[in-house]
Image (cartoon, rainbow over all chains, first blue to last red; front, side, top):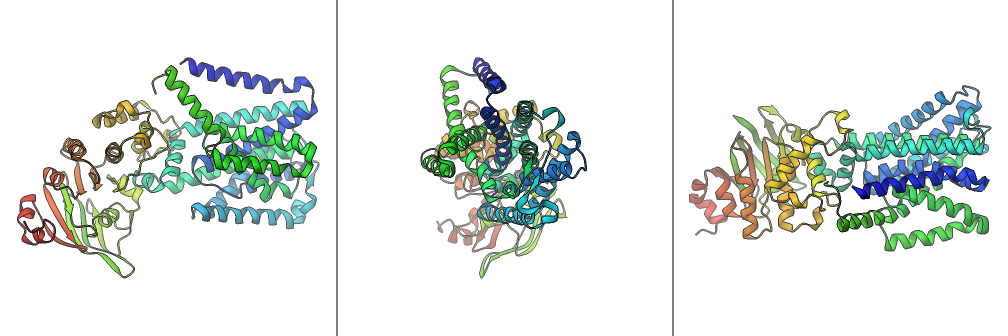
Length: 318
Length: 245
């Protein structure tokens, strides 16, 4: 039991550290922190589908963009400035799009699933790029306001932190539920799950829609924070980013993706300061190293260490 | 009472005819063994009877109702569960979670599926099943850390976890030592009387110890059906399967 207390204490320390970042009054760290929270929500939504269910999408930015564009269109076109309306509608927009894409994409598995989600992601990009009267094309939509209670960078930081914690807790309990275990079962052996009574298509579909909805939350935060939504939010690079973060952090662990998001956000910002456009080269080397020597990522490595600690010092009955 | 009936079942893969006009009936509580040389069509038959493969022709009835085009998960919900010839365990999760997942397949309430996996009722059931095969102490171990024989036992346990009325077992003793075959025999021999069993086996000791009726397949055709004694005495079976001795 004491190990669980240790874990809880660690989480509290991390929480206090994150909460105290604005106290240093460094705009850089507030920016990096806020960007990290947005990336972490996005990567967790990806991990639910890729890490837990074994379905790696290559067009996940479509749902991020759906949330971002819904936020931008609602608030900048004076439809409503009410945050309590904007956020559920943005999530709904992302969920509806993922519901539609899920019907198409989940007819396939493996490499074909990857390709079809890539095609759907590209289609979304093409739509936001060419439908200029609606999305302003390459110009994007500017002037997206922040919620009234989170206008300053510091207050938005805390707002993003709160949303991140809520998303983490919700996804954590979802992943630990019987439903989450069923998703893991599907990842491990879908045919076996079907013969055990699971309608696996429905499970995968629900996971797809939920993942899309959480990507929409990240999209909402991104639009509100940056004040501008452009085609890059639906780009291939944006779809690839959570994949890299999960690969680095460890798929199927949730917290691994968060670690990956932290590392890549930090690398992107601080390496970007010195070698502007070449920082992906260093990221590439790191990812190659992880692909070759640590396929489970940091998260799974930490889990192994934790299991060894429990075995060595005893644990609660499981 | 008639539980499952197969009528004129056939299966072809392209030009290769694997099952030809197979008909038989399984009654509640029966222990039916199926034998035949490699390539006789035993696994294909079990695949069709569990919805994994669609038949090319013929019909399947479960409790008198047509079930030919039924999907695997619906077969399970009809009370028909199966094991596979090759282990299909969930290798990267604990043994306990394997059994818990297997026991929740028929749970239709989405609300309950959102609850914790380790519910008391299901955990007690998982404990009972794992104790039955002597693996409760290893419940936290991942299946890949178990011996092959233990994995075969868990394969059967997963099928049992969904509380089937008809259990289809595809070579439960394949690749096991004599001692391990006795373990499988112990597990299957202690199943409730009213649980119906349909299993294919190459191990004659397992077959004749368990089966109350035997079906013999050869080149996709049903060539004999009867009690173990009748099958032992059947000249054609002896000739093509038992070596004529």
